[in-house]
Amino acid sequence: MTEVIAVAVITVLAVISPGADFAMVVRNSYLYGRTTGLFAAGGVAAGVLVHVSYTMLGVGLLIASSTALFTAIKLAGAAYLVWIGIRTFRARAELTVDLESKPQLTALGALRSGFLSNVLNPKTTLFVVSTFTQVVGPQTPVWQQAGYGLFMSVAHLGWFGAVALFFSHSGLRERMLRAQKAINRAIGSVLVGLGVGLGFAR
Picture 1 (cartoon, one colour):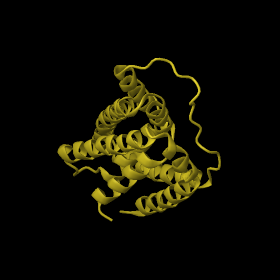
Picture 2 (cartoon, helix red, strand yellow; picture 1 turned 135 degrees about the vertical axis):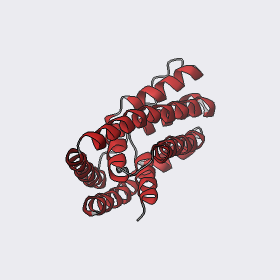
Picture 3 (cartoon, helix red, strand yellow; picture 1 turned 180 degrees about the vertical axis):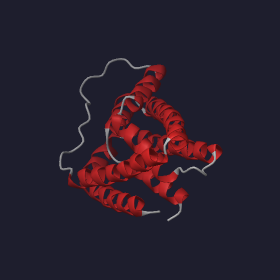
Picture 4 (cartoon, one colour; picture 1 turned 90 degrees about the vertical axis):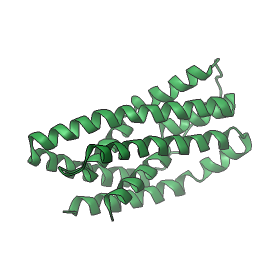
């Protein structure tokens, strides 16, 4: 598996795994309509760029200062992918979405809610750091690292944009949520495999 394929697969799985961002976009789309949901999706994508920026800087400094420390963090990142994969596979609780309260929400408010949901989400932090430590090495050019980061952001925008379009239709929401258990098991299995494979890769 090439580095590009690895980062693409990990990113897609991280994006579609149900979590706080998913619940927030679903809620905004269901309560306020398609446009508000799309603004929230844009906020999520912008938040990803924040994680990517500090991760690129941190990984670069680690490579320059200590190869041994970078290797240790790389292995920790692989272990995290295995751990989160197992947790995702075994998850039983259904994702809950608050559809009762309906305060006023402007387009700017939706953008801000998406941005803060992602920036303050530790799951996104760990996924971005774990992914970068697996695919970035001493020879990886900065433009390629930036490309990985941009792909992560675009992938979030594409997925959550689709979620906004999908869940602005109320009849489709329950169908997606009912499939959550099967989605969790599929995502968890692949993440465990990726974590093990990347951890043993040279």
